[in-house]
Image (tube, rainbow, N blue to C red):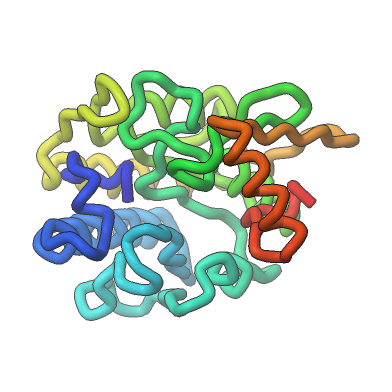
Length: 247
């Protein structure tokens, strides 16, 4: 939700705040609808929507009643399992909508990687990665390529370095983790729809993300206490990372 057009306040992404119900859910749903319309115009025959944002509630970030008809929506109590439920061999490509930049980015809005407070940064083979890379790698394990991403300028920079040919839509410009200036939502949705149409029409030109094994994974924490907590949680089976590439 952090990279959704019109979202410029943390409270819009958290279900315990009134801003979430007043604007966060509707803004998210309409960005999704714009992408759906564009993908269909580009030739997509089946579209699945995975509600994959955690802090906005277990299954409430997208308003199913306002969603474009004819798409399959994956919501429910198993947040980490939703993407897995949607993935199968018939899926060709994915759009990462409303993403945020990685924890290390200084000029991104609400930047983090996996956990807003617990994890300070993540690297694979010495290269910093965020949730865009982790999701793209997980999808690539199933032969699925990423064709488009949306978010602020920090996220677009990150995604473009990772996936040079991917379609991107910058819907806001961020100064730091707390400050961003959004495009008018109607304008941003027009851009999303046009980019989604282009992305769907050039699937044959793209390839899934691949990193040469072996893999070295580094996860850094803000304090020693946070690191100890993660180790204890992992031993007790409570600490899970969403991408299989990390196991």
